[in-house]
Every structure is written in structure tokens, then in C-alpha cells.
Image 1 (cartoon, rainbow over the protein chains, first blue to last red):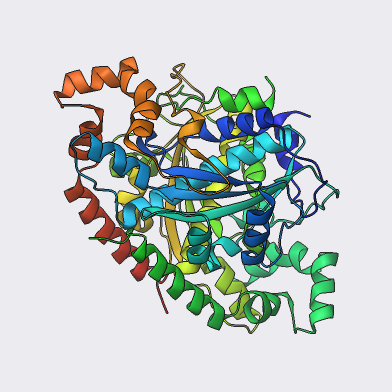
Image 2: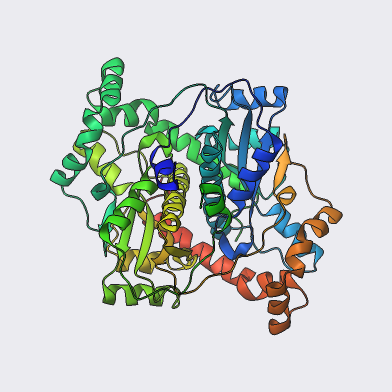
Length: 248
Length: 248
């Protein structure tokens, strides 16, 4: 399969074979991750590869059971701890403990993660991104012994697939692309670009099962309601402050 | 070239041929971008593709001339404006205007961007990430008519390469990987994992030309000094607040 076909055929995998990932495969996909562009080539990220059974079980709890059958959890972090250690040891300032570097570190950690994921699929592995890492950033950081200056932003479950996975629907590209400048949407645009999504069988089934008035309510009322978002935002912000990434 | 080789051979491209990107190629790489995983399949991102000469020249100024010869600037944004338009039109809440969704939107926009970049290289295109988008997020958002709820987080210059580009050095993977839990670095670790970086000819030349005491000082004193980081952090935080992404 060529690279374009590989990208077009991505499926999230949530069930894995009981089969470890050979070290050489793990090394290769991490090396590919590290080839992604990053700000100033500073590589302000780390990846914690958790394969030990007990630690994995504890992580699984903090992800509400997601990915429990994986061969490894990869917890990918913004990491200014290592960089500051280097600059300090060289007699220099430690100036990357602020919002700018939280944001650019998050972007760089994400580019690393996605490159690693593309390599993983090329190697026959499957993965799933677990957004719950942002819900439980603090207990996850504690469980994994992360020092100040380290913020987990992405978790992947990774392993050899024990399911095919299904291709989820996406908005048509006209729904996400703007020519030259941003062109705001009118009501007809919104209806048109969401038509496929709202008629997608899996989504219609979710609406039926949950008894919501429409698909939007699945998200705003059940999956990610305002009350939860506010509580998680606050705890995440508290954690990044404690981690020393919001200094002025 | 297979996918692993493609990823390992990534080079940033800063000089481009005077040759437009065919629409079908642009559509294909954006489609590949959109196949990346994203939180709840909500696709809280947009991409502004700027090809019109005058607008491109104005963008080039806000990026301090970087990528001026590109065929297109791609400004990739966190976008809850479109999502809230959809939920509002469906009689639901608009609950994604907070720090949690700034973070998860930034991650999803980055996964989109990296998938798009891998596809771009597979199509023979070259690109460079311009971190300056975070320095000038507010004037860039204004220039590109972005409404509230839209935050530019990544800019790519994109086009057919007019240079080979060079493979930059990276830390050895032992420098970024932690087994099971995070293992903090001691001074010897820091020396060892930075050895290749500090002896890399390009880096040694930078130190010589700039007359700094070592490579670390290139970053902490010249490229990204504390004073600038604090000023940019503050203006970026002000902007995301104005954009309505820090509500409680």
C-alpha cells in the first residue's frame, strides 16, 4: 500500500492481540516520530512506553478501561524538564516555562505522535488516541513519576490489531477548507456540510439508542457537556500551572 | 520510497519553485490530513489556503519573510466557530469555548497538519512549519478574517522544492524514550544524549558565528530569550481569551 492509501485507510483500533511489539519495531516507529518537524529542533517532548503489566493496568484505570488489551500505552508529553536541565548545566537561562512553550510543545508532541502513528500502521500495528489523558493529566503524571516541566498531552494505546476497525465518516473537504481567507458559514453551509455526518448509519444509531433529539445533542448533552468541560478545563489549567508551564 | 523511508527522509523546505499546486493534489493532501484521528470525530479545525499573491505577501510579512516563495500558505486553526454554529442551529448548547478544547483542538489540528505533510511529501511537495504563527496569532487572525472561536496554531509554507533541504540531527531515541515510567536525567545522561547535537557541524558553526559560549546559549540568549517568551506568552494568552477559548 502506498503512503497516500495508507493515510486514507486509517482506522482506530481498540482491541489488540496478546502479542508484544518487537523492540526493533518500537525503536523504528519512535525514530520516525522524531523525524517530524519541531520548533527550533529543540524536541521539547518525551514518550513514556508502558508495557509492564501492573503499571499498564493502573494506566488503564485512569483511561476508564480504554485500550486495556494493548501491548503498550504511549504517553507523549511536553517536556521542558530535559531541556532546562541541559541549559542549566551549560550555565544558561531556563526560559521555556510559559504558555508559549506549552502551546508549541503541545504542537510538536502532536506532530511527533502522528508521524509515529503513520509509521506504526506501516508496520502493521494499530492504535487509538485516548483523549482521557487531558481529563486525568495530574494523576497520570503522578503515576508515571513525571517531574515539573512535563505535561502529558497525548496517550496512545498500541498493539497488533484484533479487529478490523471501521472507517469513520469525515466532513467533506469544503467543510474545513477556506480559500485565501476564512469565509464564515451560513445556515445553509452548515446543513450541507453536515448532511453526510447526520445521515451516517452509526451516528443515526447513536441518536436512536440515546434518545437525543439529534446528533449535536449526543455531544453537547452526553459525551462532552458544558459542566464536565468547565470542571476538566479548570483541573487541567491548575495542573499545567503546578507543572510550571504558566509562569510569566 | 516506502512510508518508513519517506518519514525518515523528511527535510524542511524553505525555497520553492514558481509553480502552482494542482487543485487535485491540494484536495488529496487535505483529504489525507482529515483522515487523522481527532477527538470524538468533531474535527474542530479549519485550514485557510492562501494562494492569492497580495494576501500571500501580507502573510509573508507577518512571518518575517519566511516562506515568501511558497505556492501557498496553509494556516491551520482550532475552530469551534463552525461546531458551535452547528450545535446552535440544532437547538443545543455551545460548550467548547474553554481551555480543554483549546488544548484538544490544538492537538487535533496538529495531527491533521502532520498527516497532510506526510501526504504532501508523498506527492513531491515540500513544506516548512512557521512557528511565527504563535507570535502573531492576532494580526494573522485579523488578516484572514477569522471570527471568534478560531485560533491559528500552525502555519505551513508549501510548494514544489527549489532546494534539497538538509537532514537535521535529532537526539538519540534513548534521549526521548522512558520505559514504563519517566526516569529523570542525571548530568551524565544530559551530556551523553546531547553529544551528537553539540558536535553537529551546523550547530558548531552557529556557535562560532554568533560568538556564544555554547549551543544552549544560542537558544536561551539569541533565538528564544526569556524576555521575548514572556511578551509573546502574554499576547498569545490575551488573544485566545479574546477569541473566546478561555471561558469558565
